[in-house]
Image (cartoon, rainbow, N blue to C red; front, top):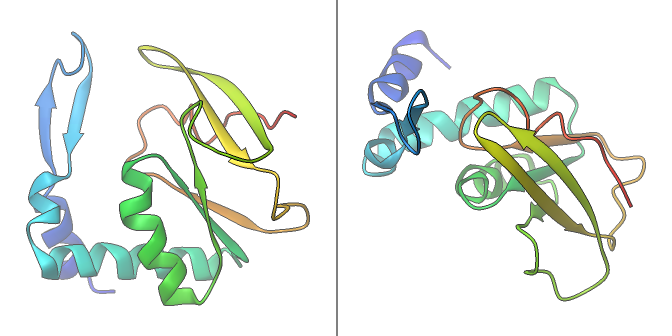
Length: 139
């Protein structure tokens, strides 16, 4: 991945101040999604990073983490696990509640297949405070 490619990716992410609430700087990926070359470069860069981490499974945080997580899993020939908002999974699941910079949230993941023993790389569309990725597992 060249610096030029990542510069193109960065240029396609716009900053919107005070959204969804005052003091938050929202990173809008819509322009990135409208540029196939930049989107490809972003997914290639994420796949290289996950490969370097020794990933054996890719997890994506609903909903925008699905946009990036599935192509990364496909590029690496790894399984993909969706991390969903409450009430959207039809089978047995584990959940975790966590703090965000502007509130609280909860994610659920199916218990089957098991994530035990996997080296999971969690993909979301951005990193603000890291609250989602740092959420402790629960049962």
